[in-house]
Picture 1 (tube, one colour):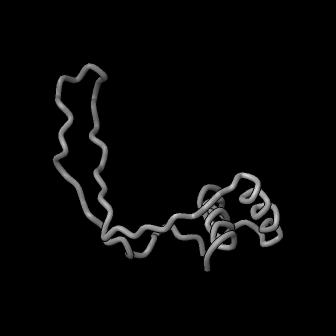
Picture 2 (cartoon, one colour):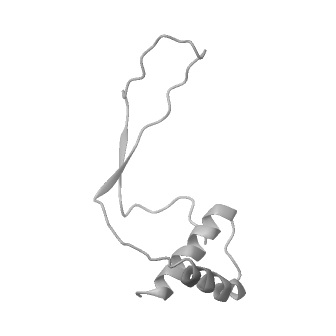
Length: 86
C-alpha cells in the first residue's frame, strides 16, 4: 500500500499504540481527513537493527559518578513487537 491509505494506516496504528487499544474502524475517515489536512506523509526506512541501553540509576542528584555507556543490547529490526496490539 502507498500514499494516503498507508499514512492513514500508520496514524491508526500510532493512535492504537498511544491509547493502548485499537481505534474503531469508524474513526478511519476522521483520521484520513486529519492526515490530508495536516499534509502528513509516511517515509519508510528499514535499519538492520536497533539499539537499547537501560538507564543508570543515580542515588542523588549530586552524585559524582560520570554516566557511562556500560551496557547495551541490539535487537533485530524485524523482531516481533512484544507490545503489539492484536
